[in-house]
Length: 206
Image 1 (cartoon, rainbow, N blue to C red):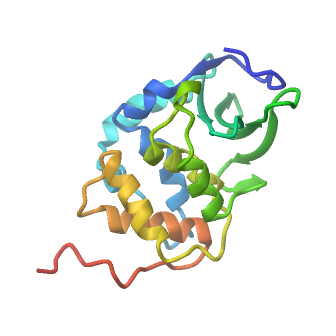
Image 2: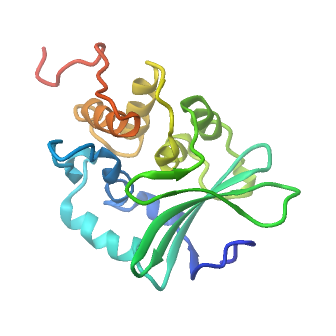
């Protein structure tokens, strides 16, 4: 696989990995780490098993084959997520491919925290909701939202974000009982402040 302007490593289409057990824990658990005293993130937050997460990590982080996930938009642009598996320099690169421009532009990287240009919540939702099925890549809105979630850089995330993010999590297999708490962990990690939606009900209620 070739991405013009990005020649860092051996690229391979990764979209088929999205439905493998353990993918979402590998992709999103790092967001949930807020501080030294924070609750330790576990795969069960995403309805996944630790053994599955470990097994898939061998594929996701293989230095000989860097998974690539394409998120094409209806306007012809495309966000590309690349697992940069350089030994000693692992990270996730987010590229922008725009019609009329030569080569991909690296807009951000995730290496435990975001560096580069992030997205507001509304920009993230707009990209998630405007797929281009004829272009291939990832076209399911829930998967698009979660795949690009590490790009969220917005201290004023609207209240409705919790419901939308929770729905996306359940769409990819997170249990309805745990989706609200997993949503809370993700939004707290991304916004840098405690997040709780009073509309959420405890799984112990009723």
